[in-house]
Image (cartoon, rainbow over all chains, first blue to last red; front, side, top):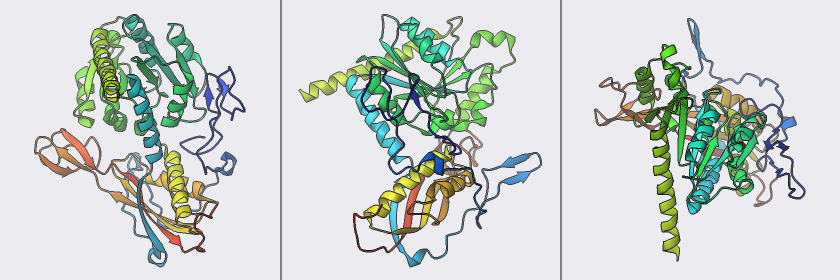
Length: 311
Length: 123
């Protein structure tokens, strides 16, 4: 399902296999990925414009800009008192958060250090992963979950390094969610005490809100993009714990102001850690690999502790 | 962003609650959306219109209460009002502000039409 406008059907794929409800698990590792219980069939969601609601908020317009983020607070609906009011106070993303907590628990028990890598398309995420896996060879086992709308190209690039990789095709979806990642755990050989790299769909907006159960979100900003991206897409930079400023080998050819980009990112997230690196020249990679090694060691140690307390 | 996913989350909460209370119809749904929650209210309303069709909350009034954004300014050591995540502290002008309120996305309450007293039975 399209998670932005709701049109179309899922077309979710695992390793290129259509995610239809599988009658029996086959060697092809196809998986049934049904919409959540109670979801209406996709065909019921057509693009009929809704009749204008009385209290619809209009975007605010000023010269040269149309802003959907402003608007007056709503008025309470009339007639509420005539029916039974029920207090609920439930988080709308509560279901995803519960699944993410289960994923986190699954990872913790195995001592797996999981990172959720997010960025715009074209920031060089896959190249960064390939280089990271290559440099970690012999130090730390790595498994990869690749999220893209279509194609298995990225998983193939990862598999060429020898690391196990599972491709999730979200079809028309704009982000991975905790359910998809939980399903992937069952279909991917994730070694215990390893590093799990989850490459999210290239999108600086939607993946910010969806916890997958990872230890950290890592946002990648390449120096061929604008320095002002952290302000243009603040939610992603706010959700991340680490920012990788990538493709730094290209800096001599660009007018990218590194300090400005970092300042903008820290405006949104004062606690954000920043590392600069280049997958092509390898500069800055040691700090990135050390950061991973520290996290992986901590994950592995706490899993070992948990086992000891149990026995 | 992803307002359709959020709308589906709302429907799932609304349907579960109606079922648990044996309600035949939901008349109103009150949501609480923080100003810093990155939710486009206009778009969420559109998605809810579509998603709640033919559900137990078809035609329900949807009210959305905004929760103003607040943050903790490290320099001033106090809570200040902010409208965006990257806003400067209105007191000192610094950017060392961690959002503390206004990030919520919640179904706050619902008005249920008193259905037949048939708990557990509602599809």
